[in-house]
Image (cartoon, rainbow, N blue to C red; front, side, top):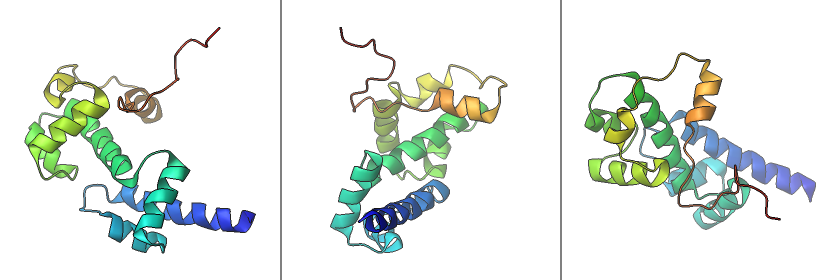
Length: 143
């Protein structure tokens, strides 16, 4: 049984690694399921069970993370950044960005350039929390 779980995790990691590397490309569930060597329905179900979010939401969050960096580290337009990170519609990008980050891309950009700290700290600090999902991180424990 442990071997089957390990194999399943390895397949999901393979697909997630592709999403991390090729986030700007048009990736869809059928393509990712083929990479993981499973059916589409099984892929969605197993990915969510393994990583806590659907493949589509993971890919959106990954794209938004990259957009967050680009918005605060350069002066390119929001539309250019939107297209560079894999969104094909500025409206969709703005809606997803606001859902994940909590503010529109233009407002986020006004925070100014990223502080000069090691990349690992900057990434952890700037990682978006999905506002649509409840989180207990940082909340006081219930008495």
